[in-house]
Amino acid sequence: MEIKRICIGSDHAGFGLKSELIKYIKNDLKLEIEDCGSENANRCDYPDFSVKVCQKVLENTQENLGIVVCGSGVGISLGCNKVKGIRCGLSHDYYTAKYSKEVLNCNIMSMGERIIGLDVAKQMVDVFIKTQYKPTEESNTFIQELKKIEEANLNLH
Image 1 (tube, one colour):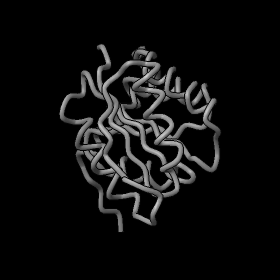
Image 2: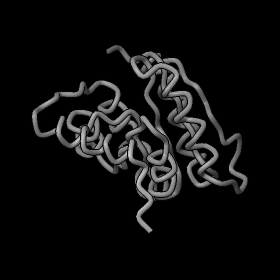
Image 3: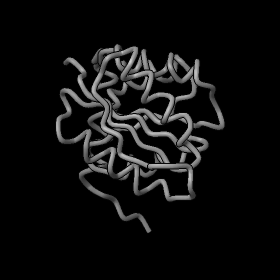
Image 4: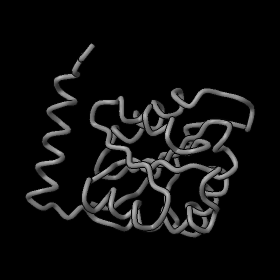
């Protein structure tokens, strides 16, 4: 699988880091960018942008990956993980970015602008894009169990 497009989105709290990552991905990594918003640092709601990124990633799961940014990375990752077919890994360093792709086959990575700096974010983007999923019996079991939950769309209350 060759990644050709990065679909990226943020709320207001992640807008600054998202803007810097767009420049890095375009200029240094030479990949196509799909900017799913926000357009500025004015107050906005992260669920709107998590859904937009998910829609774009799902258009071509063989060539598209997603990156989402909010203040902590938590809220926007929750929004993404509500969408069927998406596995969004909240990452805060090189290890978690690599693990989310290599072991869990995540198709979106989440990060928090208030948590990490630009240099770490660039390292995370690099490893997330370059790392290939390495299926094992254990990781396949995890993913299949997650898919069962997703299909059941459990209403437990």
